[in-house]
Amino acid sequence: MLTNLKIGTRMAVGFSLILALLLVITGLGINRMGSLAANTDETVTRAPKTSRRQSPRPELAAAKKPMATPAGDDDGQWEAFSGSQV
Image (cartoon, rainbow, N blue to C red; front, side, top):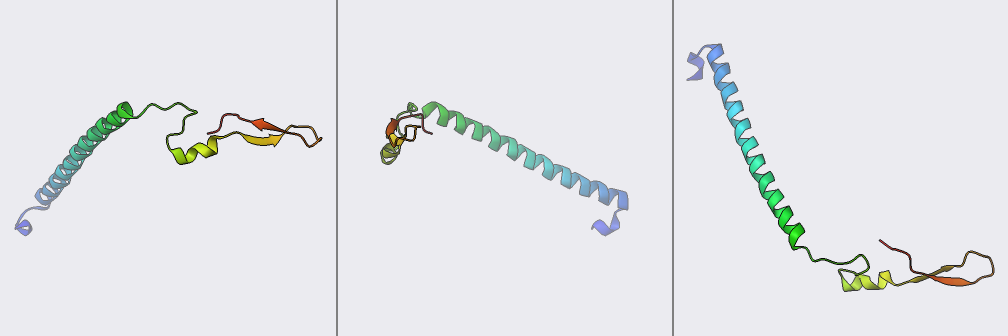
């Protein structure tokens, strides 16, 4: 079938097929990006509001407790440190 066509016609058919495939992939990409943006917006607006000091998981609450650090001078005293922890 394609062997009876001139080289210019075969190249035009091949280029058209590649261009059509490119348009289909671009359309799918744009569609998926739109749904991803909608899902992201929904996740952000429905996320529970927690403060920085409040742990979203109870098992991590122990990690947020104050810890003892050296007082800074060499007399061996320790002081409680409750700085912001990430």
